[in-house]
Length: 254
Image (cartoon, rainbow, N blue to C red):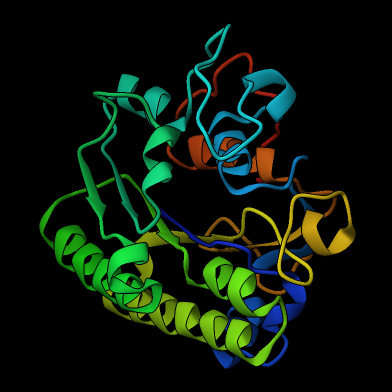
């Protein structure tokens, strides 16, 4: 069993309506289109919550600047490393490096979206991930696409430019799945949504995220009820046969 977790930053559930690859995957997957993220609905706090299965009020990072935990909780990469599993991260927003602690990764790949463009960086990440994963046996891989969030802040959520960024992300997702095949369980999600040219509030537009899971343990077309971003790490751990950290607050979706 291998798990590939893919996250387009700022991807609202309603942005998937006219994305052919997303609609096809929904028909083949278990999913929620009204899963909840955490508050504040800001990128780094949401990612730390995803990987550590607790709210920002517990882990302490409430802005896009990482705050070391007062009472540290092992994150997903740490508990997988302790179980001798191999983890890899591919990302184009540098702060994502803070989701794991030193010595927990087998590989990390970063392309600066701010410098070379988030669309181009996403395509580079996709090709790099395919090349690496075909060569090296990796149990858990996380791939982050920053293009939708960048487009949302520049042009506004649900604008043509934002939806173009969502389509670009799904083009990359389709390429990954075609190249890597059926030995993976694929999890597609987001950290938060957005409204106007911002996010961070408790508005539904900011707080609702999709969670889409395709794999042999998940029934096609089945709705996942009451899902939360903090449920993702326990789900990955269970798929890989590893016990969750006892302080995690989320529950597995299996």
